[in-house]
Amino acid sequence: MDRFFSMVAARIAAWAGQPAAFIIALSVVIIWGVSGPLFQWSDTWQLVINTGTTIITFLMVFLIQNAQNRDAAAMQVKLDELIRAVADARNDFIGIEHLTDAELERIRHALEQTEDCAGSDGNGGAASRAELIDRLLVRR
Image 1: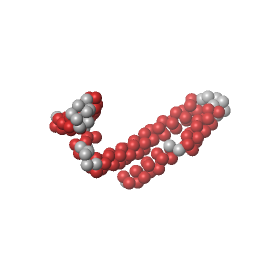
Image 2 (image 1 turned 90 degrees about the vertical axis):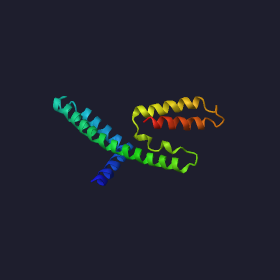
Image 3 (image 1 turned 135 degrees about the vertical axis):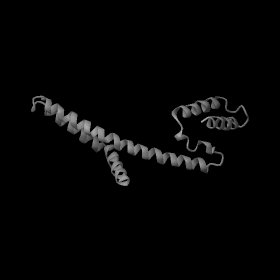
């Protein structure tokens, strides 16, 4: 079931991002708008577009979220592999996507502060960044 949903979600998300999908959606809205006088601008006429767009939007949220989750997970795996492959990279950053927003913000802020002082230790700030990361990750 998961594989089937992922396959369908990926295909629909890819199709929905194409110009043809936009042109079809725009055409539907134009046809609906032009048909207004034919239906005397009735409540049913308005309900048709409201219901249709609500259903499509509701379903697309799940499909697009699924595609984004897969893309983000794949990107994380790739970044983790790059961290592992680079000799001077700090492995402490692997898996930090699982930290809370507050913990990530603390690390980001501290790293930005360290970047402002980079070069003061003669290593381009590398030693102070490493110490900072160690200190922040231990506080979790």
